[in-house]
Image 1: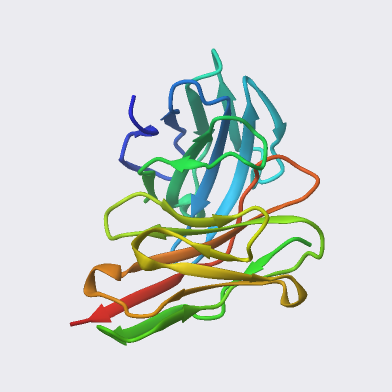
Image 2 (image 1 turned 60 degrees about the horizontal axis):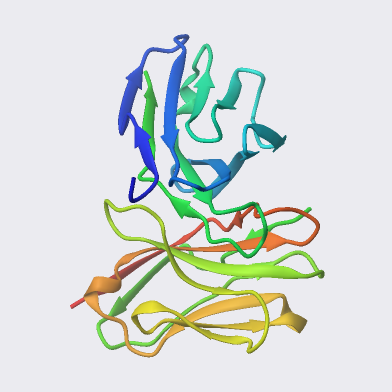
Length: 115
Length: 114
């Protein structure tokens, strides 16, 4: 596609339920990133993929959070047993490669609300 | 720890006023520097970036930023803002020793009044 696509755009879930957020990166981009944007705060790094492997998952806030990437393309961020503090906008970005010279392109994000 | 600070959380200006948004980072090594903008209801977009060379970088829509290594700063400027510049602005840094992992500041919300 022309840009990074995320789905759903909005998700309301009950506390304790699991959710899956999807990211379709720009075709050909090998690097993929997940960020979280909470109200009044900046973007918090969650995890980085190069191809299908995740060399840096240091930003995942707890073991309730996990992510995978398949076929070097689509990525899914899963949050288990959601809590109210998980409410945020989850942003996905991709870049042509993981090197520092590559511009990261962002999706529109998924707004997650845990009630 | 590697961190990025944006000093102004909210800025309100009138059209034609000059803009300067501060950004400082914590690390003394090699860095790549970025400013992103998020217009209401839209996704993050790159305004400008600095990798090397001339420390004064020009971006889209009349924005520019100056990298001052001695001050660990990368302030964003625009001589004359427009109502359409109303947005949230994020400074981001890629620190050396790794891949393209952007560390973001908290953002500055700019409101331009006609």
